[in-house]
Image (cartoon, rainbow, N blue to C red; front, side, top):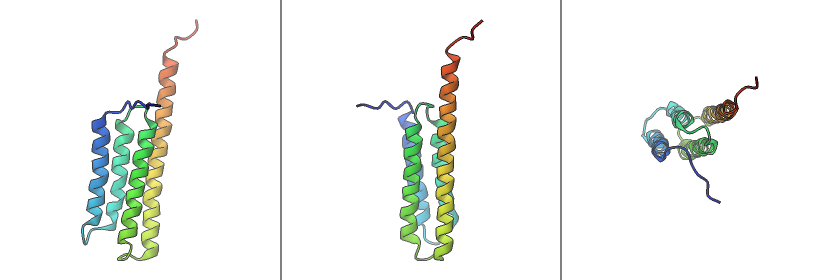
Length: 123
């Protein structure tokens, strides 16, 4: 089974590169723990610029952002207060999931509206 993607490959590539950039920014020594909140930016990018038919792309990008966030937390949790770090990371992951969920809901609504618009109203 071949799945056809309606979103531009350039958009997907730029989003994946943005996730990598945030991961690298988190690895900078002496950086702020607030950099983890930047993982929301790529998820928002793909949510806004992807096709209404491509909800799976949004979910995959959100999953990748979550995975990289967790990988960085496991690598860098030595220097942070553990409870503060866990709470902060859970809030970031919650924001990523909320952004992805709202995007999928919006895309579903757009598809429904487009489908209804295909048929003229009965006189």
